[in-house]
Amino acid sequence: MDNFNISLNILNYFSLFIACFGFYHWKWLAIHFRIYVLLRLTTFAFNLINELLIANAANPNHVSLFSSMTELILTFLIFYLVLKDGLMKQSVMVVLASIILFDISFWIYDGGQSKSIFIIAVNASFLLVLCLYYLYQLLVIDNLQVRTLPMFWVTSGLLIKISGALILYITNDYLYAILKEDLINMWTFRNILAIAAFGFTLFGVWLEAKQGRLKAFDS
Image 1 (cartoon, rainbow, N blue to C red):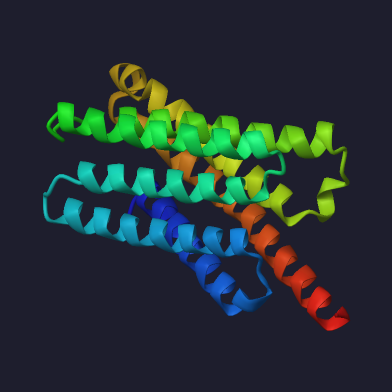
Image 2: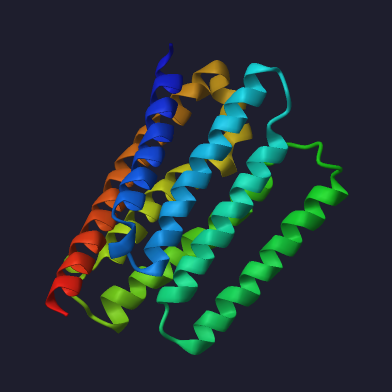
């Protein structure tokens, strides 16, 4: 097995591990963390379906699109729950509805035939902006001690994962023209970066469960 597939398998099963860890501590987690746990489980499921399709020489683009839209919806829902400003909450839902409409319209217009990487890149761009805004709110507007905030770690992990992937989504065709088969090394590095990002999010889930347990015992 090559380095790309090894790193991809580690990434996929790390996602499943975070989901299992979250379900084990389910009762101590706030609702937005429960949604994140579901996100990790659905991501693993979609990736598994993708691998099965590829192994059977079937087109995985439709599954990739639905996976991206699911990640988009669940992540936007998480930030809708944690954002404090009412106007920002409304803006998040309006933007989400607009992106979903764009994704579906593009997919129908294209007949579902093209690579889904363009739509995934668009979705990832909006997720990146949302993560950056939330971190800006924590660090600048609220001026909080973020190291003790579970959502800081989850958002940081999401930011690392999305940033690494987005660069490759945007430059994939250009890099392929230069690197050819060696482009797989860049995607391997992206997987390694995502594995490191999952370390941040796992710590955030653990911290949320720890704090939730302490609150329950103190009440």
